[in-house]
Length: 378
Image (tube, rainbow, N blue to C red):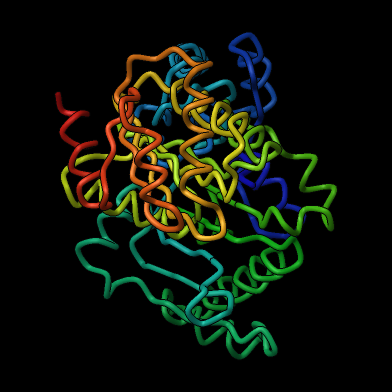
């Protein structure tokens, strides 16, 4: 589960992590009052959306006075960033930045622990730093049985600072961020940038947190922060129907049985020059009703030009899947090409059932993927 920056900063403050003064607004009419509450001329107007790249997309603006802040607020509210509409903003006091750094804790499956990541070059270009000079990003697995005691926190703080006073501040901040990360069952706690001000203070002027959905029953306070975007609502509704669904940005809709096969299908699409429109694991069901629900999810995306149905029949028989597809598409009206690959138990019988139907049938995943990519480009 993702939360907004202002919500993450509320958690930071509760754990003693320094943040700048800010005011939340969900309409342009509240900006004037927010300016008075901040009590400063220079302020930053920041879009609140569950995505990165806000600054480069024009969703973060420095205003020199109240009039500029109001103009920026009107421009940012309603804009779209990475496909998400901005419905909320915050106004933050402008900070005199001397330097920027990156700090985060993330769950690392390789080390089976929390992983501390730090970089002396934080800010909007951190992705480029990671891609071009990955050696600048320091990674430290945290032993869950030891945690982050004083001696380790100071050791890691020296990676980013030489001044003893700043090392002490950084060590304390790392311990508080780790405590928040662990106690709230987070999967990510990120500060980018963590700034050193001209006055020598460390301030988290951005905050990002995501949480383990499976642990939310332990944290009603965190669950209460859930405010899903439209795509997240769709994903949540699909989950209630037994469908694992994540919308992406491509044009090839995927319907697959099994998470591993779904990931492989997306990789194959990229390999042959296409882009997947979604991750969709329908599970082992051949229920026509579930197929209809899955297809409805795919076809609601206007970017989808073709649907690739990739089925490996194990316990679920391919002829049952084929029968379910035939029944489902008798009830649906769409001109979008549908490519079907059936492999496994009773695959020949399944393909025989689909002969003469509106589907294009492939025997291998490679053939099916090529057909889907070609259809998407035509």
